[in-house]
Image (cartoon, rainbow, N blue to C red; front, side, top):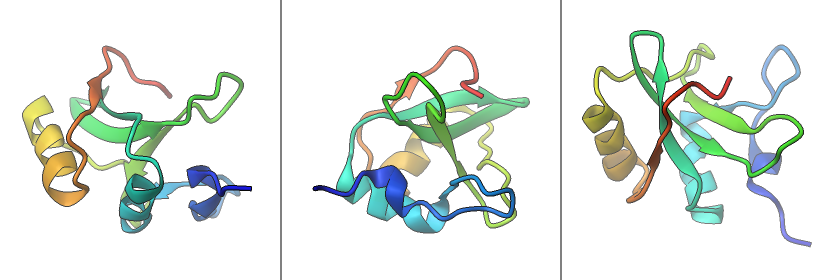
Length: 98
């Protein structure tokens, strides 16, 4: 049975899986689809959709402190995905998937 990309996510101090920047490249290699740019606070963040409908539908990429990566613009978020993670396509969400 193939490993699902969510299985490689580390568990945070609250017992929930987290899409950390350090594991994001591995996730891209396992499943390059489903990445997104979404509104966050007064800017934008990036993440990956699981395709699930019951729970844990979206994972924002987070820093070591557990806070989502933050970008001032959609273009900056797309550039990060393209340059750092080699993700060439990402949907732009109109509202946060929290």
